Length: 89
Image (cartoon, rainbow, N blue to C red):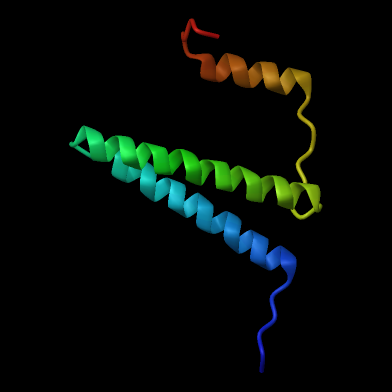
């Protein structure tokens, strides 16, 4: 039997792969002692995050990953919760 994947399955797999990749590059960069290697890993991590955003946006546009609009009160609650004394906001 020949396996044929839907567009949604392929994109979901790509998104999950990107999420996994960013986790691994982040862990590697966090534990890296050498500055040059850490900087290289951080550059790769940024590129992997960019790819993840592209895949997510494509899925969202195609209706495969719907996200409801956030209520203004929920946004403010999240800001208050995660601000944690950070004065840069």
